[in-house]
Length: 430
Image (cartoon, rainbow, N blue to C red; front, side, top):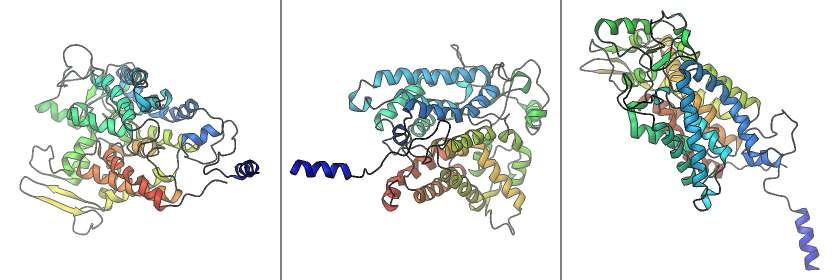
């Protein structure tokens, strides 16, 4: 009698997280953005789940290979090969090692490679011109470091610290300015050109000419003969110097308006491509299209990137920034208080556009912050999570560095996910 009662209880028990109904081939999963176990219940393998993610990354990947050439391919394959080797070794280390999966690790390895510059594949025993050190060991080191981070954080989807963010921030701490990209191929040498075959850093009159050419859109810029690539300052570095009150101006002062007019590359170079940047961040439109494909496939939740971008843009407009920097004083203004600030709405919005496009904020919003390990489970909690990450990412870009401030914002914002999950009651799918 007791066994019959137990059997009846088991028959009527409702699981806490029942599997979603099966989906047709090519259709979006029923619960958009849910973790990979839901996809596995519907018959999708873990490899296919992350393979669909790779389809979204194809767009920034293709743009990076075109803009930065065959050295970009070496960086990507070098990181992926070292990730595969690292997984093969670390899967034998303890119970955490058995949680490592090749498909998950290779997906994260691709994201890591897209956030690295192409000049790392320098090769040779001497550093190329304009680079202060031999950097090719960073490529396999990044892949192995990512695997170690995965092992330390508990394998696939169990930690609240994103392994890619932890890896990139540690590399920045170790190598600093050596990871700043300075090269981009000329439009006539796309894909096949050598990224490091570029003029040496200009001085004197040559520097003035190079600076004048940098304000011309990349698609209409006059070619530099006998070179495959050009060398310049990335927009993120110029923004960081200015917001940190360290402008690179020979006149001892610079205003926000003159910075945007004279020292920044054309905004279309950041949107379409043609500015020095990490491999997957050189074309904002490619990142957006890749993210939209992930949304179409139902692999990520639209609430997260939408909240991040909107709140970050609002923060760029509202937050106080220097509007004039001189040798003796710095004039800080709240961008929303335009009256008396000598800054109009067009300048304020243009500044926000540059901050949004120059750093890794869009890449973080679509490809990193939507990871199943760091995002909350509740739908309302995801709005809050995205808003918090957006504000923190914008603050990181404004007051720390435009090149990695978004990673810091995600690192801090993801720490609130357990609290948001406890506060927001998740309704089971029945």
